[in-house]
Amino acid sequence: MHFGKKRCGHFWPVCATKLGQVILVACFSFASVIAVRAQTAGPPPPPQRPQRELAPPTPISVDSSEAMFTTMCALLASGFEADVSAENWHPLRAQLRDRMQHQERPAVEAAREYYRQHDSADPGAALSRYLWFGLVAGRAPDFKPTMRREELPPEVLALEGFSEILSKYYQEQQIGQLWHQMQPTYNREIERMHEAVSQIVFVTTGYLRAMSQPSDPRTFTIIVEPLVGRITNVRNFGDHYAIVLSGADDIPTDVVRHAYLHFLLDPLPLRYSHVVAVKRPLFEKAASAPRLAPDLKDDYPSYFAECAVRAVELKLKKMSPGQRDAALERDDADGYILVRPLFAALPKFEGSEPSMALFFPDLVRAVDLAPELKRVSTLQFAAADRQQKSGDLSSEEVARRRSALPGTVPNDAEAIAALTEGERRIAEKNARAAEASFQKVVAKYPDQARAWYGLGLVALLDHDGPRAKQVFGRLTSGEHAANSDPMVLAWSHIYLARIYDDEGQSRQAQAEYQAALTVQGGPEQARQAAQKGLAETSREKPVERP
Figure 1 (tube, rainbow, N blue to C red):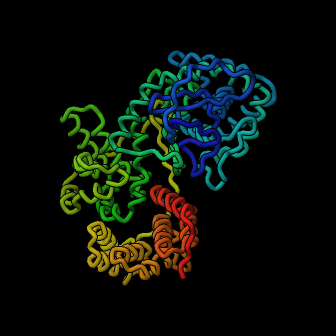
Figure 2: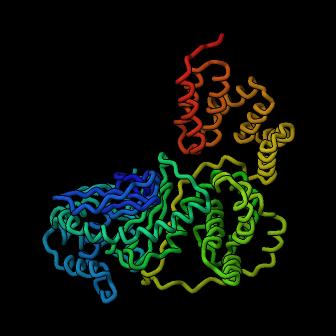
Figure 3: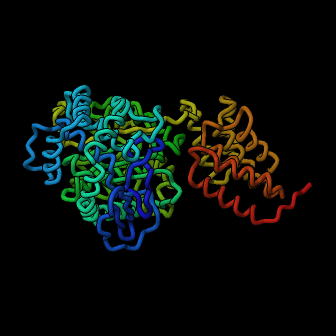
């Protein structure tokens, strides 16, 4: 969703690292929380609704999508759910299915033939593929995917050639004009979502003390599409998250909040991978739970994020103590064994000042590994559920898609513990203890970037400029550069820039700040620090010292 500014040409939360364009039509402002603007194509624009004051820009938006609408029209014209009763359908969906089923001409027949060739025995799987396509498709009339082929989800790759089929269908059947006519209906549905979605976002963001950055490339979007039906589709790929909802009559509050919490918390286990790694023995126990989601069994960061999301949910939901205890027992039985200790640690966060993005390492460290392993050893995981019927389309569908990040921390419990101890000692400004921990790692792994970065911080604590300059220089250039660790690389450039600035070498400082800004995947705080440093050095008159 985007709060405050229109993101035309941006892809939703669901798909891809750099999600492509999705036409944002029918927009509005969410008072003080969400704001969305509309963009429509075709004839005269629909009546303008009263303008509300726009909220500050955020990465959240509630939109409709011409690409998704066209995809669903083609799907209904091709026979999808043709034998399903429309008795409980949204009136628009029922009317349009009847209209699409009676469409004729070559492009419609080509779409029907394509659908038959790509049919699936599982209606849910069929819908999933086309929803993915609608989310990654670009502008009409071409609907070319907005992502590189290697970034596309497998579901979209399975629909090879569908862009051309959809483009011809769109032009032959004048779907653009129909889409324009539908705008008032979509606008009303979006407007009616205002209060419920605003409240979810306001409460969730407030609890985590999350601060939005206008330049953040991550997005969270709710796509309103009545033609999809009363199905909740929650998807994420890389930095983009999306939920496809049928309308405002039955907003699944718990599902929207759960997805939004993932949007806020998913990056943290990856950002603090060396802190989270210490608790991995618990994950190895949990991976044997029959009910644990299969895609989490070999994805520790995603598993940790899921447990963190569930723990925060227990704080935000209105539940009695008995209901909360029952939820914790279910989580344990299903394999989400970290929920209980993370939930128990949340009061420390609530009594602190930093945002969750900064407090997260302390939350992780509050999980006492030995007692938790002992507790888990007595647990009896629940048996697997009977497989859900494949034809049931009324269930939530979650598709996790994350970009694989290079492993920068060795899979060595002793080394991980030393890195974590070194970080703790740095926070305590205990340079000697920190140095001992980092040297222990370097002795075993001579090129370990996080350990060298820690030694650079030790040099700064010791006010040893030449040594710090040497270490951060090693991490930013040459064969030992921390190219696989964006956090280390970005901050090393920044510390090196500050050293140059202290030496009066403003040109070199500016070059290092610029280099920090070019690091792909670097932390937002590092980007801000680089921008601030660059602005300050640019204002100063350069006086190069000999």
